[in-house]
Image 1 (cartoon, helix red, strand yellow):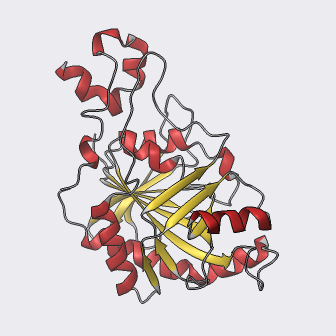
Image 2 (cartoon, rainbow, N blue to C red):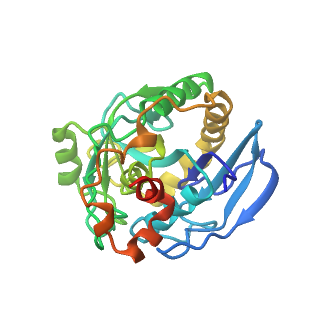
Length: 289
């Protein structure tokens, strides 16, 4: 059943979405446990959307503890085809200042304690992930950020670290040497799982601070980040609303067929239990086999 085709995952500082009407709360059961919180489904500027606070209302879940598989699976079962993710990040570049918005186009994975795939247990799938964000959705996000009056950066490499501790100065300098532009803790494995679920995914990365490489930000604190998040929350919400309002109805990207050439295991060899578990994601491929 399609309840919403657009998903919004709120990050630090964005725990609810004003402007939603015709609201219902969905507590979705998944094979991976419950999502971060109840999913709020409602109408935003004429579009049915599903809003999920990544860290739960009240910010109760560490980045490592976020149930990423459950979150993406639950949104998929509600009919979501596109996800706009809000992420709080630190800047690794002088020209990307606190309060700016970055619409990244690349990722570096430095996480190490998170389940990053739906597959296994009798099925092998290798998706293409060279371009980790949906180009179509990124384009809409860039336009929306500019129209909202934000200082927006089109493109950039987002390095995702495990946390919950912030970077050491050596790590921060290493990320800069790698060519990364921003650093945060939440876009992965979210982006990988969205691709596996054939959902378009783009990040709206809100810059809260310069990371500790910067001489004026040698000690990044939670208080500093929260203060800037509160300042920028209205801008982030405005960007999201513009994305939702301006997205074309039909997808023209390849995200919706990401699995078409990626499934290695023959369907008849996949255990029935795994087929049932993954039916919302792989069901159409099993049925056509």
